Length: 294
Figure 1: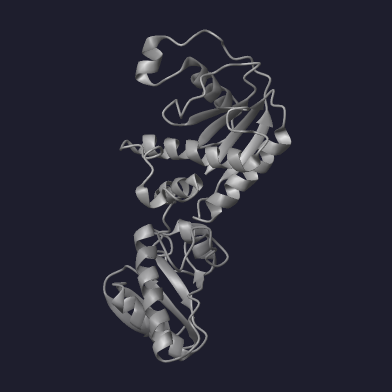
Figure 2: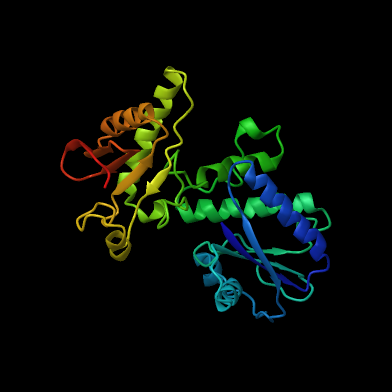
């Protein structure tokens, strides 16, 4: 999660930076990755009082200004976050505004000279961000009895845990390279789903027969038309249509287990090469064939 952070006339930026570091460390315990991009701003925000209708609809002109400032940087972010000196500017110290993509915090509000307190209340505001963005009941202030004797930060982490992006695959990551061209992200997700099931099967079979786990390395995944032609691939190859992969094997027992896993996972096209210990998998019409690698 990318958080674009602005400091406006703050007195202790060192304490704030320490608080951001602690918030990041706390979030990492639930596998929520917080990425802070911190800069200072001297922008003067408007000081007109909020109109009643602004409060009723939950939007503040000042918060919109903060959001607009973040957009003007051209940087990508999920949430903009302003820490300000209330003696110089006075935007409403709100929970998130602008569709939940902005939060702001007066420097003195949460004991800024205590980075632990700052980190705790940053997580508090992030709870509001996610809960309100989810459209359901905001539980941030509704502490569950099970947490009554625990630090409040435990409650915030409990809420935030629901918003940690879930991994789609157990054996693959989107950025994992697939040979000399492409990554897992270049393959059709539904096809990778099947390979993930196959990898789980082969892992369990390896445990049963007490051999080292098959790493399920992809020698070749997606190929461009040019690259596929260059290496002599079929012009109708599944590598071009992003639903084929060559899985490396270190011996013929691994070839057998990879084939078994592919069948269990519903992968329809399976080719084994007699002179190359790897298995080609794709979603073409049902087949299980043996070829000589040219």
